[in-house]
Length: 200
Ligand SMILES: [Zn+2]
Image (cartoon, rainbow, N blue to C red; front, side):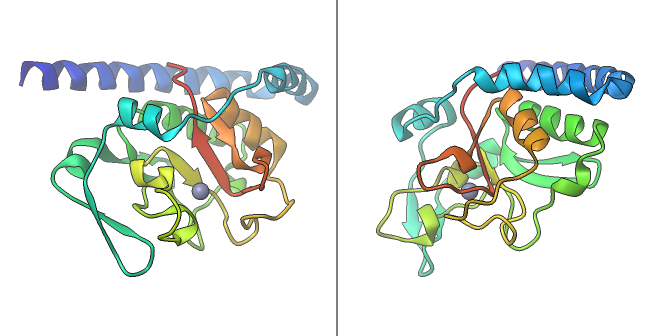
C-alpha cells in the first residue's frame, strides 16, 4: 500500500513537471521555425535503437495469454489492470503502459503547443495498447502494442510498408520524448512510434 501511494505521488510529480514544460513550450512558441529546425536536426543525429522482447519484458512485465481467432490475444490475470492506464491530453485519449504515460503526455503536449495536433489522430485503427501478434499474424511474435508502449498514428494514410513519412516535426518530437519512428525500420512502418528509452 505504502509503495502504491509513493508510486502515485511520483507519477503526480512527473505529470506536474510535464505541465510546467508544456507551459514553457507554449511560451517559446514564437521561437523562429529555423531555431526549432536547428534544435531538431541536432536531435536527429543521435541514434536510438528499439529494444528486444527480453528487455521489454524486464521493464514492463511478463504476462500469460491465450490466442484469439483474429491474431489478437487475451491477456490473462492482473497484468492489464496493474499496468495499463487511460491517458488524456486535450482531445487525445490513449490506453498505454503507466511507465511510458509521462513521456507520451510530454510528446502530445508538445505537439499541441506547436500547433501540430492536426497531424495526430487514431482514426482507422490507430492507438497504443492493442494485445495482438505483429501484423495480426499468429505465426509471428507478439507486437509491442500488447504492452501499450508503441502507438500507431493515422494508419490509413501511413500504411505498413509504404514510403510515406509523417510530418518531420512530429517525428522529431516523438524521438525527443523517447520513441523510435517506425518509418526508419528496414520495412518501414510509418504509422508507428515505438518506445525505446526513458527520458524523464
Ligand atoms: Zn504499430
